[in-house]
Length: 480
Image 1 (tube, rainbow, N blue to C red):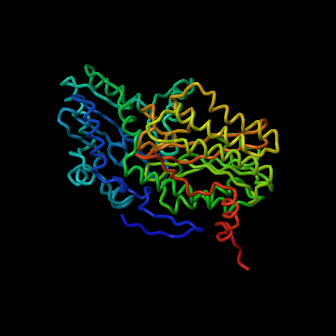
Image 2: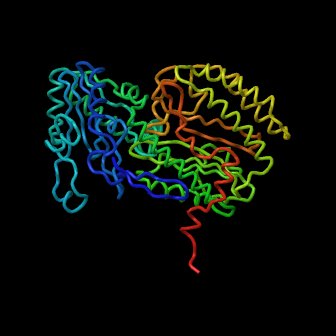
Image 3: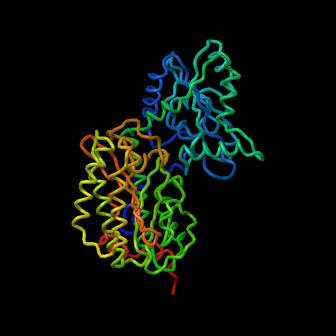
C-alpha cells in the first residue's frame, strides 16, 4: 500500500486509507488473512459449525465499527451480518442485508450486498441474503450438528472484553432495566431453531488464535503505537502551565485523526499533579500548575487495533531536583524490568532477573529524600515477594491487540508474536509524587522490541523536546 506523509512538529505521520471511510470490507488486511484464520477455526471444530453475528447499525450519525470477534474472522464492516463456518464442508457463508440502491446512490455510496462481487471482495465462499440464514440454520438443526458461537458480549471501539460484559450483567440485574444482551438473545434464538443441537462457546478458541499476532497484525499495531507516540510528543511540545488537561487531549487527537485512526482505544487518561496516583482518572478538567508533573496515557483505535503508551513530563518543561531524583530511580527500576524480558521464559524468571538488577541499582543510587527511598524500596519488594510467578500479568501490564486489554496470553511463557505492556507505578505514600510509564513490547524469536521506544523517556530528551513549539503555537496564533 502506498502512503503519503506530512510533518507535525519533528515527527512524520504515515497516512493510510482511514477506517472511518470504509464500506463493507477492511482495506488494511487482504482476504487471505481472514481465510487463514477461518481455516484454523475449521481445523478445531471438526464436524461442528461456527455461527456468528456481527454488530448493528449505530444509533446516531457515527461510522460503523465491527465487533472484534466478527471482524477477526471476516474483515466485514456491514451491519447485521451473519456468518456460518461449516467444519464438515470447510466452506464459509456470509449473510448480508439486501442491497439497497437508494442507500448506495443517495446516502453512503457503494457497499457490500449479497452475491458474487461480495464473495470476491471478502474471499468468503458464498455471500447470501440475510433472510437465507434461518433456512440454513434449520438444515443444520435437522442434521443434529453441534453449533459453536461466541457467548461473550460484543466488543467495539474504546472497549475491552470485560467492559461490555459487566454492562450487560448490570443491565440484566437492574430492576428498572432487566434487558438481556444481544448475545443472550442470539443464543436463545439458536436454541429455539436448533433444539437438538449442542451449543458450545466459540470465544475460547478465537481468543487462543488472537493471543499471538500475525506479521500483518504486528504492522498495524506498530502504526497504532507510532501514532500514540507522536501524539504524546505533540502533547509534550504543547504543554504549558495554565492549560487544562483537556487541552493536551486536543493535540494528540489531531495527530490520531490525521493519521487515519477510527477513534480512541480508550478514554484519555491525563493526570496532573495530585491526580497522578489515580490510574484511570479521566475527568481531564484540572489546570496544569507550574511545578507539577503530568501523566499522559492515551492511544488511537487504528484499523480495529489499538496501542497503549504512557509518559510523564513536567508541565513547565523542567523537572525540579526532587522530581529528578524520584523519576530517575523509577526509570532505572522500570528499565530493569524491561531488560529482563526475553522469549520462552516464565514470569518468575523475569522477576528473579529484574530483582537482581534492581537491588544493584538501589545499592548504587544516591538518595537524598527518605520518602523516595521508601517508595523505591517498596517498588522492588513488590517484585521480590510476589508469590504468583507464572501469572505474567502480575509482573507486566496486559496484552494489547484489537482491545487495549486484549485476550490473555495462553502460555506460561512469553512467546514470539505476543504483544503486551509493562506499566508499574511508584507512588510516595499520600500521593505527593507518583510516576507510571508504559511501553508496548513485542516478543520476537531472539528477544523483544519496544514498539514505543522512540518516545522520549529520559529527562534530558523530554526537556529538549518540550522546548520546541507545539501545535497550539501554530494553530492558535492570533493575527497581528
